[in-house]
Length: 445
Image 1 (spheres, rainbow, N blue to C red):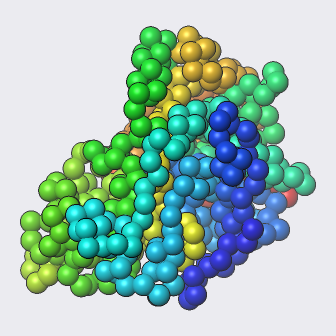
Image 2 (image 1 turned 90 degrees about the vertical axis):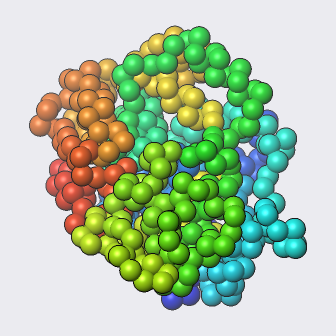
């Protein structure tokens, strides 16, 4: 299925398709699907497959993918759209992106209805009672879906590099070390990329894994992010980001709404752009939102409403909003409204691909941590959240399989890059700067 672009979007060589995923027990067939957002030349002989992290989705990588495709000759970037995003309702967001709905209508449809009974037309979150099968959407399901993507990327002898951001880095390790009929998933891959995420060498204990599974059976299938339950994190992000896109200098749509959490409300009346950025810049964002932070700038010293000043910050607010709203892309946004709790539970047992007791409890088969091809190339970039832990995990993974140090690039920017800056910083971006020579090293024809 080709991706339909919003009129006026500048997204050359962009397409989207869904393919058949693996059968997950109890899941209706319509959800056994995995999506691929492809950006770059269709005839590229080299494919970089990227896995989004916690509560992120394929469109999250779109701005970064465009930058990579422009700078890395012969490469196409594929970003994975996990199955949980099939539960999302983009009807109003699509209309908004196409200029057929106002910012107020976007706000009403996704958020205002929660406090105003007069709003009759609104999104209907999926009740947990209807998606009990999602409690089984862990690594076994995810790796099965991802394998369909990787095998498609390999067709025709193309060179494939697999990577991921945050939890996507752990998924990358899990896939590379997963047991596929006695062989590691890394077989046939040219390289691995870890963007402020990876697998800790130390697994959770078997008792902790059992406790987590038992708790999951009595709770929501979905992870709560920043104290905001699913799917409302996604609603806040798309409304805030959408308002920052369409009406950046107007008074914030949230100013008079009591539903805004106090820890992300600016101390003064702010514009849409300023209100959105205030919630995610490390200087003003609460620690509970570290997963979403990027260096964006600061509130202006004056103005009514108060605006936003980039002042040399790494990430432009517009690019950040593009990333999370999926601006220019129909049917996609950068936030996963429903993130499977089971996926995060299983991630604790990957342990750099070393067999452990928790894997037996959870059904995780990441056991080939010492069997990666010695010719494998690895690039790890540590930012504020993962930092040295990400670099150590990548280094350990390489050492286990006797991969030469000359094949490993480790970059520490934990003191200067927030968790999302590696994906959103522009035009200067140290992650991209070191990625380019890495891709040249592993490039095929």
